[in-house]
Image (cartoon, rainbow, N blue to C red; front, top):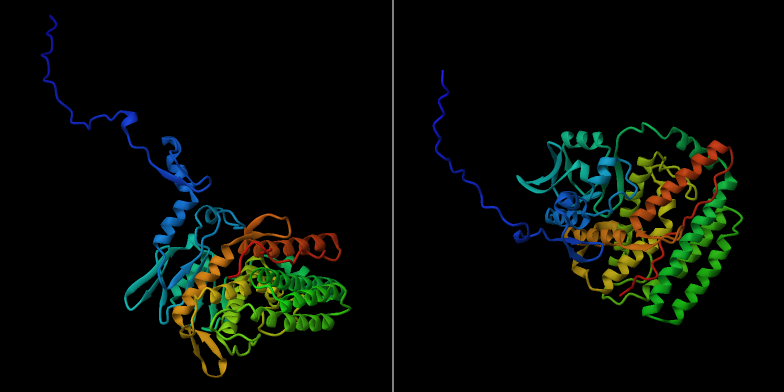
Length: 435
């Protein structure tokens, strides 16, 4: 049978988008934080570049910020144990200060609601700590989600006093706590560590006064610095802990009047009065110390420490003594500078404070939000780490101190020797300015 050719089919026109020459396409402009210039990444790595660019993550996170929740940015990979959290963690700490708000769960997200309105929300992979200030409610579903994710929740009073934490059971760290108990029983080792803690605290006082003298030179500040230098040398050779307590009290009596001389604001500040705070500046100091204590308390629990068994501070039931030991050099380097700079720049006024009965002066709700923003900015400000000379945020320096103490205790326990004295020095803030 002869072959019959197939009749030609009609040509079908496919509707396609006109091809654009490669040179005519508009390249995706992105901002590179490292060299502060516009760059055009290749198409193959454009998505990875966008995912790894920390500035873009900051911008997306800043767009989600609310007025009632203040969250902080952290450099990726700075001491975070979880690999997933290290890659997707732009917000390590979340604060909720809205009165009557409720922390609830929505899938894998934590949301903050009040009167049917969502104030803020974030994924659990993007935070590593939650701080609740005042009467804030937490649902059981949100608490379960936080506990499963290993996120500790700190409960604070309106004046900043730590009430307690909600955290999961300690599944590890037995060797570390045994080594910590062994250090507490060794009086000679405790005395060596206590000397270093008090000397580091007095050196931090000297640094603050040195920065203050650069703006407001006076004979009183110069004499106070000289007296603190003598007290620091005495602390390095104190015979016992009671002598160290006396040296610490003498240093505070010299330091705070000199610090008050740098107050150029209308807010009254004559000296330190903590229980209760009698003036607005003391209320800000106490609130900042409480925030710092709550943060280090959660960090110590996450690392496996017993935060209530201290080295220098004597054991008092219900007081996180180890947390107080580690924040001593950071009180003045972070909080004192933060408070003095904020009041001198006029960021707080007398209307931001209120009298709370016999508990003294405390900050109002709006002032708490402003203070938390100032606190997070201070904790993220790069400073020189005296341990290795590198510049890193204060929060990372504080974390490194805890990790260094952990390594020292575990190494001493394995070798059967007393733990060596670590570097307790706080951040070197000489390049910062006091307004």
